[in-house]
Image 1: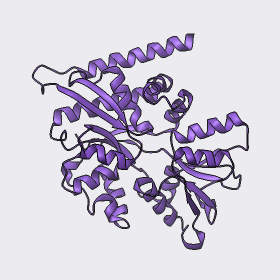
Image 2: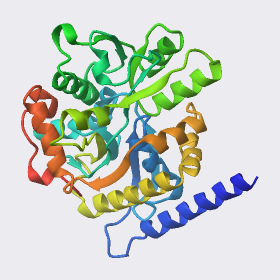
Image 3: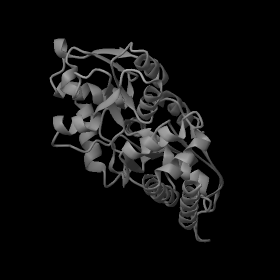
Amino acid sequence: MWKSLKTSYRYLAGCLLAAALSYTPAAATAPYQKLVLAGPTAAVSFPLIHMVETGALAGWADQVEFRHWKNPDQLRVLLAKQEVDFSAAPVNLPAIMANRGLPVRLLNVSVWGLLWFVSSDPAIQSVTDLAGQPLLTTFQRDLPALLLERLLAAQGLTGDQAPKIRYARDAQDATALMLTGEAPTVLLPEPSVSLLLAQNARQGQQPIRRVQSLEDAWRTAFPQQPDLPQAGIMANAHRAGDPALNQAVAQAYEASARWCKAEPAACADAVHKHLDFLPVDAIEASIRVTRLESRDAQAARPALEALYQLILDHNPEAVGGKLPAPDFYGS
């Protein structure tokens, strides 16, 4: 009961903070009728959900809702149809859109670590142990696949030394293959990793453990660019031209991200209302291990451009063929 009371008090505190942030002076831009915030099943979405739950943008719209998307292809369709106003996204997606002439903006980078190598094989202690070994993943395209490709190349894991990569349909399929012992090692994002480990613990089978985060391995392989920006919040083309709204969204998101990291249990309760297929304990565990740190995209620009340039050198189409223009970055 005491834990429940503490969680309630913490949630109330988050609501009061959001209410203070959502105040808009009478002279500001007139409220919108509706704003849609969107995101995937990942910690990058959790502050967006907290913003909706606490009315953080009440001064800007009569109605604010969260919409869940399952893959980047679905997000591309939602953006093209202008069915979402702001969305969490892998950092290369808005770069592609901007370089194709769409005036989207990347407001911030908020996730700097969410990918993990997980294994039931005690011989696998780091990425370097994957030489010639089977590796399961769900990523065939998009940013995680690009990062894995660059990491393996930097570690010399190519040709005969390359891991034998097998692609699962999705995170649920990958989890099932790991739990049945059909795959020994997998690369997955949070919260899928926390969910897999919790299911494995309940079943009492061969232990499955975190081996190494992709971000830790990246820092070893690329010491000159140790920060790895992976996901942030983008403004869709039809909202990118409202700097006051963009700033309000960025500020509210930063406050909600700080709150979620400080109060992971209460944040998990709020997230579960919108993503009820995720157990609360898995959500909380993923918040604790994910590097959720909102940083304005202008401030993160050097790290973003370093990553974009690395991708340009090998897969130029994955960022739209060039570096985004300066006005792409920040609110």
